[in-house]
Image (tube, rainbow, N blue to C red; front, side):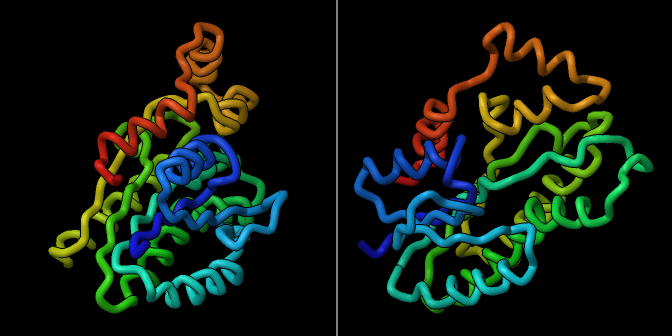
Length: 216
């Protein structure tokens, strides 16, 4: 095959569901995970919060020259630290958040665009928090919004690149667990999502992304 799917955060949640669904459809998938229980040749272990590891990752991605088309699914993301600006006790935690949500996807795409004669499509898994303000989510909303602005500018600069922003809504993942375990103004809303079974299954959202983004 000359088409490759690159999925970040594919070891659990939505990323795992996406990777599994694509593999079931006989697609070539490269998973970029922070950790892995297996040493698969189709997985690159990289902590996207670590700038040194991220730099090593981008050098590897530049060598993906045998593919004519690459579809990058920017799925990995973190929501912590949750809290109002002024309450954060660790600059390192802020930096790690920005590295995962903003720096990593920009660096990955920057590397992929340096591959000659490549058709590149980006599926950016975004959030409603990038469009409306939620108290306590200043880092999450702003970092996800920053990615959207950067990618929209990229598409303006390059007529041959396709960018799709996909907001999946609330999904029953580890991120939702962290939200419910945090203290912020709208916490009860997310507790009720779980109690009233309003959270979507990752597998169903993965099917919807593949179908609506028309990637296979």
